[in-house]
Length: 205
Image (cartoon, rainbow, N blue to C red; front, side, top):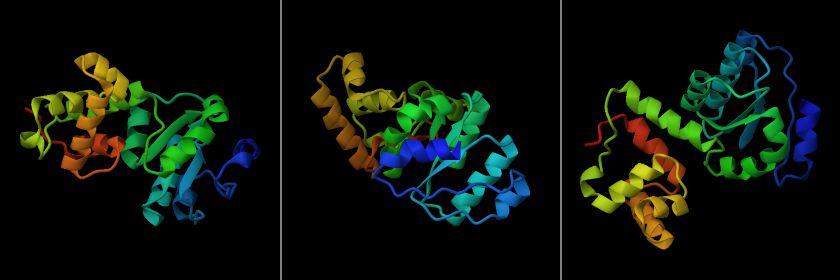
């Protein structure tokens, strides 16, 4: 798998540093010293506990590091949600990685997500459901009705064109409202806005 990753990434704009794990035992992975990197592509072939230990280790040592987890098959929802809560930004199967890894890397490197839209939407829903209430943000009182509608659809991880279709408005109008939302919440990317909203874990009227 390591050689396959190296082959896929041979034409990437990133400098690739490979590390073969000498152990897949959780205690060993918690203690190992991973190389410092902007993005980590982790092969999740080990047991879930071991993978979790490795991811925790990386983020504790390098909090700014971005994580992409690659596995043999799609994870169960509870596994996916656990990975996202731990700070994972990208999820791919081995088959998907062959086609999508080169596209995922630059997006994840700047703080975006490479996660199926439905998965991200379900994750947001699970966070809200676990609180037994709907989302509200500190800035909600400052939002116009249209901005609130756009925010609701952003939290479903819809693209601008899809939001425009839902609200029957021009795509450029959606871009205008998204820009205003980013400014009001003090974030630069829509992915950061989504995270900010569900991390606050407060009600939305």
